[in-house]
Image (cartoon, rainbow, N blue to C red; front, side):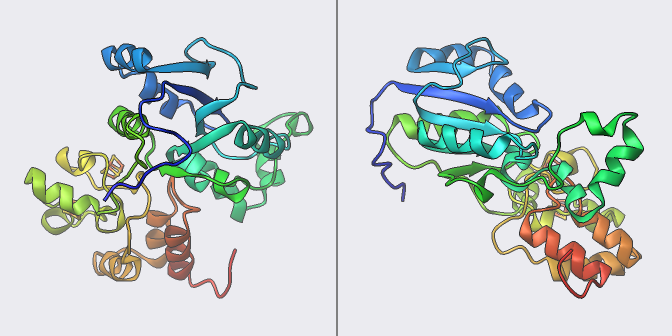
Length: 271
Ligand code: SF4
Ligand code: SF4
């Protein structure tokens, strides 16, 4: 049953901002790639800040702030707090904003050593040692998972808010979508280490539809059975390090995947 969003009355013309933090811009492209739907959306809402699309007003007060990217730079946290204060409803979009992203792999590593290995002048780069999700710093009202998110998710979220109801996002597993599409299971038929049994729906089981295994880009599903899947991967012949790497992808810092990778490596404590 949809719940009311008391802070945004139904029928209101929404003021929207799209903010970027540490990310590849792919989730912002989910907006831009809406094509004609984006033009229709622009008739229903005012997009007051979206630097990649044109409007620039980062200090604007808005009804809905979409945030792409993780907090990874020294100035990110104060900037986030300001956005939170100026926004009625805050939505994180994508793996970076929602779980820290691929760049969170450095959280368990020697980040300064990585910088020194990659850049000739690492001292010129201002970077936090950790990449963290937006929810680690400010209250988040709704999260959209995906790497990247899809235009359909974005439209559904804005549509719900226009109607005055809280957006919803399924927590089912990719396997269910696979069955609905009548895909041949790549885990069962080809022994590929597919993360579909523990990954949330939203992509339409895209990878298995093209004969490859899911690598978990939509993040952990509700109640992910990561222990059982790790044992299944071992049964496929994966050594513990390979099992850990399966869970250490774009959503490596999402707690269920982080814990599954840690257990597969046999770590006694947290990284
Ligand atoms: S291919 Fe992957 S997502 Fe599809 S049913 Fe098999 S395990 Fe699940
Ligand atoms: S099948 Fe898995 S890896 Fe592929 S798009 Fe869907 S969630 Fe992402």
